[in-house]
Length: 124
Image: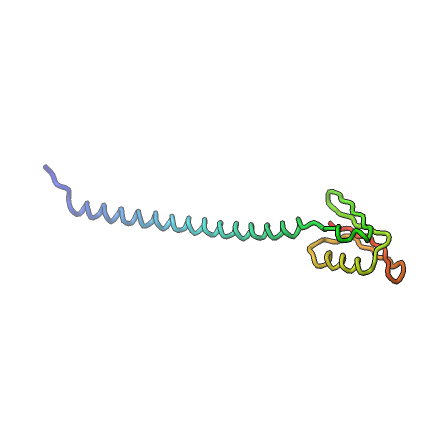
């Protein structure tokens, strides 16, 4: 009966150790890539949720009912017009719009008298 040479057994153990260490290194690299991808997707998700909050915030015109504002919505734009609006109401409306993240494509304000103006505002 022949016996296994101890040199072969040690060689096999060293080979298995090297093979497993290479596999562990590859797994670490893959884990790092997955971690980076996860962190990037979390950042993107938080950016998208912030943008969603900003762009889904609708312009609430209920507090401006006395100003007789008319609002028309298309697929891409919202148009707000008023033939006669009080300057204080206009100031509050403009502070709300200009402090928000709206893309204003057109704006016309014409003074009618000391306390009234006409307004045309187009928001994208």
